[in-house]
Image 1 (cartoon, rainbow, N blue to C red):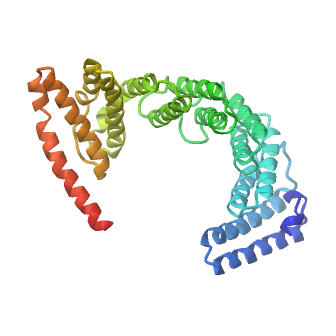
Image 2 (image 1 turned 60 degrees about the vertical axis):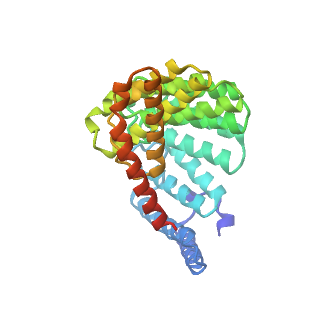
Image 3 (image 1 turned 90 degrees about the vertical axis):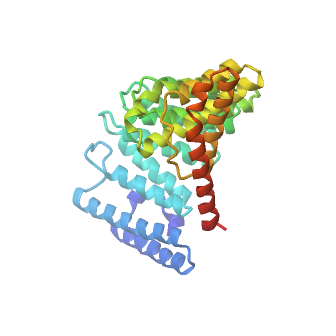
Length: 349
């Protein structure tokens, strides 16, 4: 039946029941083959089809002009399940039907952006149709460009806008070799995130800087300016974490912050610019908590190694008093690191 289905919504009730029954049987086959992932997806698809059939009975035909309809969300879910089952053409039809409904709604509709993203990713990843993928990413970006958002979750307009910019940059970088365009898009994303206050934006911001660093390396460009910009951006967000000193969220920020300072300092040290390396470390270690609460020995080692480098630079600069303030932190940290490594070896011999 799958091969003959052209449009889910053109099916009669009997055919819908047959479609659900077929996927139920398919789910049982997958389970018997010990393929629980696709088995569960098939059964979830049966449930979604049955629920959509019930909605059709209650509401009547699907009308794109009906803004209260949730059929678009159902179709997105069905499309996602088709992807899990490897039914890419049916996933595409489901996503396209969802978009048709959403584009029929006159009011501002952030769900439209979800459709653009799903279709863009599908055309890029499943069809290698980069032209269509590019067109949908551009539609997403234009749809969200001037809509106010606060970066709160995947349905937030700013989140959608930044995601569109990043995904189009990935397409330009990996598939279309439009590296200058990719760099411009990543810088647009950073510009969009810059005004966002507090802790909300730093994860995305950090990831985009990493994208830029990889892009610069691909172009064989000097990465140092990007590392310096990344450290400055993290420093600008540092104070918003002060009230979270003992929380996992603070640790989640602090360790990458130290790592970034170390990367910047190492670049300066290769140029024998010890004063700049010292300043890079100072803006971090002189203003953050020196807690060693992480359970990851590699993160802890990176933290302590950079702290030791800072101490060495301080002592070369005749600042023994400040360097000595970190001695106890290093001592306790190295003991803790050995304990964590021992636990890790016992858990994964």
